Amino acid sequence: MTPGARISAAIECLDLIFDGMPAEKALTGWARRSRFAGSKDRAAVRDHVFDVLRRRDTYANIGGGLTGRSVMIGLAQFHEDLEFDALFNGVGHAPYELSEEEKARLSNTLSSEVNGAEGASNFWDLQDWCRDKLSSSHPQNARHIAEALKSRAPVDVRVNLRRATVSQAQEQLHAEEIEAEACSLAPAALRLKQNARKIARSQTYLDGIIELQDAGSQALVGVLPLANCKTVLDYCAGGGGKSLTISDMSDAKVFAHDISVARMADISKRAERAGVTIPCLASEDLPKHAPFDLVLCDAPCSGSGSWRRSPDAKWRIKPKKFNELLDLQFEILCKAQKLVAPMGYLVYATCSLFAEENENQVKRLLETHPNFERKSQHNWTPADGCDGFFVCVLQLKA
Image (cartoon, rainbow, N blue to C red; front, top):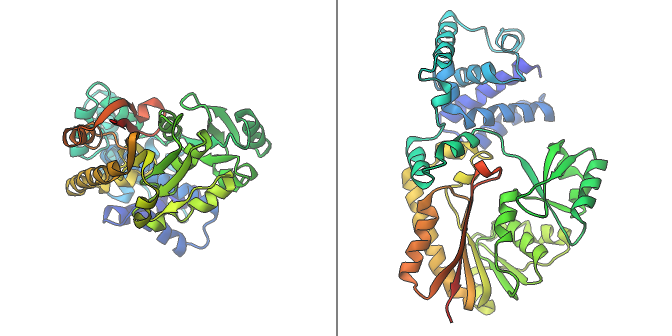
């Protein structure tokens, strides 16, 4: 596909997304209809779509509306790697040339931006209610965080220290033409700087020497009080990323649980590749193994801390769904606290940037369960160079 044809494909997908279709469904449908598109074409179209969704309002303002064509005009105007005149020229499958109205709109918008009027840089690229929650949750840093959410997320891996040192992993990746550098957020974290798309097929990954995991997620596990824990329950395990990290960082027996057993389908395979064993427990099995020295609740949330990776989510979530998540989070905490051993730890975590899902939930739990006390609390945001995470460690009094 030519660069212009890729722009046209992105426009097609974005029009479907703006009509209400989830981004992944729109992209998958386009790929199935476009058997001629190679892997590089599919990756390029996906990148265009996700880049637009990260800065949707900015590009809509530049291009003159919330349509696939308008936002791609906005993207192409400011994307360093795209030659605008060679993309919107109507040649082959490229989008047709700009109309006189579009040219005038673009000229006026760019002129306003240069002169400091209401222009592209003034947009938060968030729903208004999300912007308000971010501002109240991070009053000193909200705008900086919002700007960070507009960029692509880095690709990080965690070195399985049971299999290799960090430097050995770097050397093996280098031999596969994948360049990585140490990341200060976590001791086993590497940030991929070149050929990151090769990682899932690399021998270093297939041999279990590394796992894909954001450095912030690794830092979260790094603050857990694992030293004296013999048993750990990852209560909302999902795919088991944190279960694997805990297994690599401690000698505790780690169990995984999720209300949806299907979400844990890959844990056994991932654990085998890493050289550890992580039993997966259904809800009815929990009482047989409780109590646990540490119960980690990485609760379902808005995912606002990872909106760089899933930018569609920041436009799809609505206040009603958000409030439903708050109820679910507290319900999970109340259930999980019953599984903690005396003097054991209940750890509450989210990948949210919003206080309602984080500090407020901890406050609510402490008010209703005074037998717990807060031991530590940490926040990371995209402004720190990683996904956004919150974690609070609570200890059950004797």
